[in-house]
Image 1 (tube, rainbow, N blue to C red):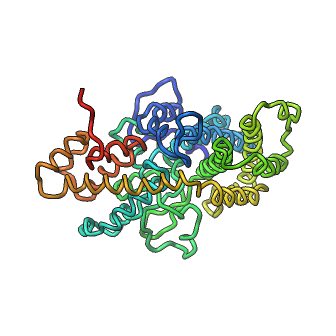
Image 2: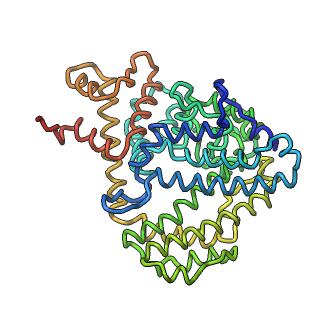
Image 3: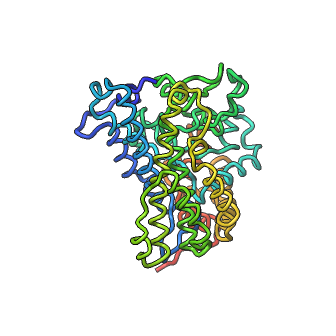
Length: 441
């Protein structure tokens, strides 16, 4: 692995020099983007209550970015001990590695549609049920729609050179957990298709040339003879781990607030994680905390501190395989707390993700997003009439699709749908279906 390439800024479109580092610019662009702000009204797991806090996509992403930065900097400090010349060539190497992972983790959910992962399923379901719409598309273009992927939507948004983000290729490479297209033919080895970095896909056909350019720049291993499929950038493993930790542990915290679980249901899991690294617990302070929420918050912080240390150690133990593209694991599966994390997943599936309001949100996603796609696509692709004209007048001007191919028309409609917040999607659905009418003053 040539670490100097990772910290040497490379942009797909040139930009003016500034006092900020290139990676700080990436971070600022994400934070100030409308797409990131909308994550505050997108479901993480639980419907967002009016009276108290649970995690939204935004707060989840911010926590993941903090955890990712810590792991990146810890690993970078050890790497510079092994390769002292890195600091001579790049004095900010440790800081820059941390900033790159932080920024990629900050953006990791930016392409997710409304209603959590059920929103992805709802979009895929619509196109599968309406496959007659797709008859003129290539097989890979069809797969982009019938197996819709929020990671690829995020890559499309972040790599678009016309929408103002224009992130560095460094950040885009680390963001891409699944560096392949939707259909991969002819893997170089048959078992490559089962690799963890090939589990999903990370770029639509509309962005494949950009993916190829980025992956080739960082000399990541090509896994297929004829398709776009690559090994992950090593730092992507930290993004994945940060995402895992920042939903598994905080979901427990939220479930306590919502009174789905009690502290006694989860404290043994948290103490066991903490004890793997002998993290100091101030029992006097813990016992003085006034309520259960504060106690869970304290234990959550200590548990994540332990997971950061465990994960960084495992990364460094396997750094040769990771940097050569031969690693085939998530970091979370090899750490001492892996068994406990699996038990937490089981608990979450059985007690949290089957919580009735969560299921109601998932069901609503199918109805709302499917209904919006049907109405919008019909208004643009079918014969013009007055009803369709009125529907189009409700939609943003950017959805002018006359000159686009069918594939690009559908991609732009998906851009619009995936960019909605939960509440906006519900509101627009009610309007176009005539369920609610505006008040006239």
